[in-house]
Length: 392
Image (cartoon, rainbow, N blue to C red; front, side):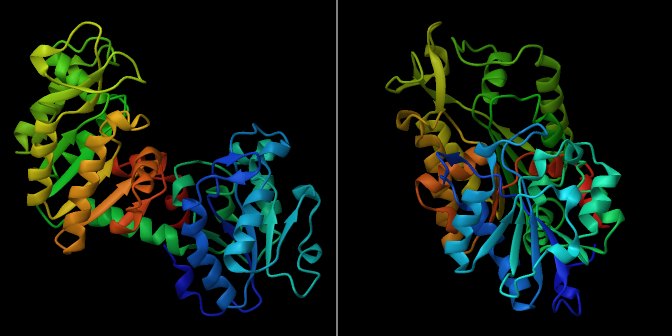
């Protein structure tokens, strides 16, 4: 993979820059700016090289149709304030655009194309669309790791028509993930949450041979508790997961990887309830397991304390209700404590986990925070990502 840092001359070059600016919007206001903050280094780098930047990105799922509620305009306005530069949003049909139509005003340095998913050709990985996009620029930069698991035109097909490079954020993401999967400093621990164990089985199986500890929390831990013969009441549980769980424990024995799961829990009668600590043998038929209990927290803290590398994806409970956020907060605080004395390398990923650490304002206390969801998980599963493969 060629890095944009190594390009010798970017002066006055038209750079087609693929970013992931799929941020949450509420009445035209950006409600979480994490992804915008992450792209500032590549924008500033290209500006410092006197490049002309043509940004491609998307918001939401417009399904190939124009939708004013999913315009890039609010993102342009937000970014303008951050970099103190004027940004031009082009609404014209991309198929009718010509390179000479761009940057007619010498003051223009950054142009945004409207939501790329307004075009049905984007998700079809269409060659003619890729060729048209390529005709607008001199080179292509992918700085959207979080979109790189997609076989979309502006992610993978475009590289067939332009000299293509990895962006700064994409390189940082890959380097961070390599540190916890290939260049490991042991002992290494993975904390994995979420509601469905079936969606994470590939990751768990791929990491067991490399990791010393796998900690399973959140809704997916309920499947293990049920498998071990415990009552889980009304808690969420996947069907037909017995063989998956048996495979996890069998593989962990083969590779001497310790599997940690809840030994006590916090329950409520519904999602708005107050929390009650319960041992596993005390759970009633009408209980909902919504967080890990104090004994489990202490067990996890001890594992983190002995770890030199930690990967965290998925909260420990239903943190949207503060009564069930303590487990996740305590995990975050334990990692941050080790981070502050530089005795751990920490990578955190996934939208819910980022939302959680943003709530307690510790996002800067992790070595690397990945805004990628699907790409993050597929990389950990050992899959080839189309966007990365296309750059190689």
